[in-house]
Image (cartoon, rainbow, N blue to C red; front, side):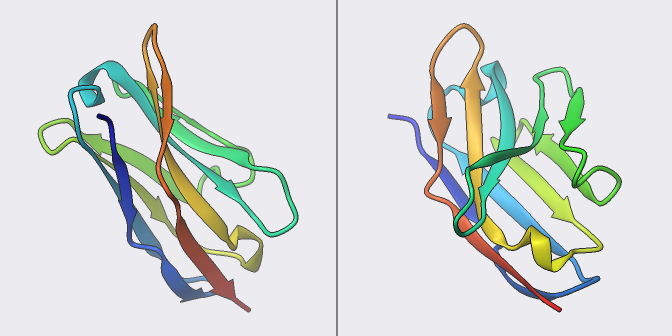
Amino acid sequence: QVQLVESGGGLAQAGGSLQLSCAASGTIFSRSIMGWSRQAPGKQREFVAHITTSGSRNYADSVKDRFTISRDNAKNTVYLQMDSLKPEDTAVYFCTAVLIGGANYRGQGTQVTVSS
């Protein structure tokens, strides 16, 4: 059974930073594109960032140059460092795993709230 468990959400002030972590159980991590998506109240879920098994990164335009995604394959963990936070970054953040040639997985989400 695959589990993605997010942590690190919380409350930050505009201009501040938070780091999200996502620990993956099972054996999929090394074979998956890991990423983050988010869903703000009343809005659809949107892509935030992903990192491939070889370390290539891709970001949504709205977070480029402010957020950094990384992965530690030894710890089966993916991180999202969020700097220069804005109130519009307020959302539930979900960890995602896309198994190459296989299924998609998503965690339960962690709330990030940015106050102005």
